Image (cartoon, rainbow, N blue to C red; front, side):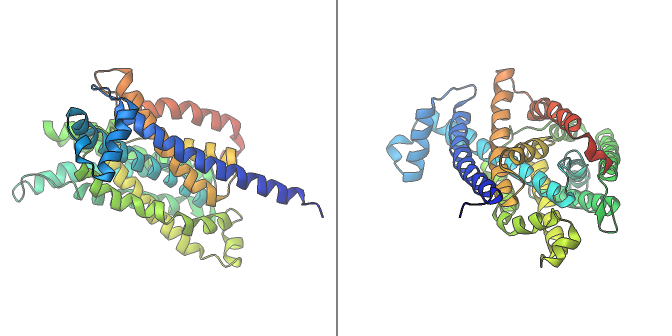
Length: 359
């Protein structure tokens, strides 16, 4: 008996998804090696690979010289932070799109990133001011915590505003996101007005976005926050696939809808908060990557989520390479690069799917 057209389509998409997963994993690894070699001191990819292999195997004879210090202490934590933040933002976008059942949902576009940035700004300005007498420097560990609270509050507010009777209005979601982003921007501006010169420089970092401040200390604080999102992707995939049919239908299929929504909101707030706290405002990663993956392999979240993680990691590391090379020896804020890529894509998406706004 010949397989049905539906079975053939599903098998074909699974094969494409498996090839895409293997291809993106390899491409991500190669891009990371290239990124580690880029900068004021250029290091050949072969030499980068040699240093990394020597570090993994503990071969001390190859771990000497200036190249080793540059690779292991400066470039490697920067690239790893870019991989984590890019993966976290892309998966957050895919989760929000699955939660709201619309490809226009994105943490940056609907105000979640702005809320996280506002909380991080408040932590910098107010925390630094009130804790000045008790500690020499505001610990970095407080920034992800503050940004997480801001991202969680924005996400919950957006969901409550946009959802009525179990149905999410996309137009309301987008308009509420614009309003929340504007309010957060105004309050961030107020904090900038009352800040001193050092705090103002820090706030400028959040608004433009950069991986320049990466270090092993910062990476060790961010990784435990973003990694749970990436590790729990398989648990969320089936629930998000069920939500594509509607919340009532997913409930009758035995999917714990409220638990899936609560976990998705919590993980998005965690990942966006940690990303904003460590790299500042970086937009459009969460809308560009998941949508391109969805066009390539379909809406199955079992493939969409891991492929989005790899695609987001590649996009941000690639944007960081461009930010370092375009105006070398200076460094362009990475948020400018991602916005230059993402804004035209978002306009194309709007023109291609104008009917989504009428839902």
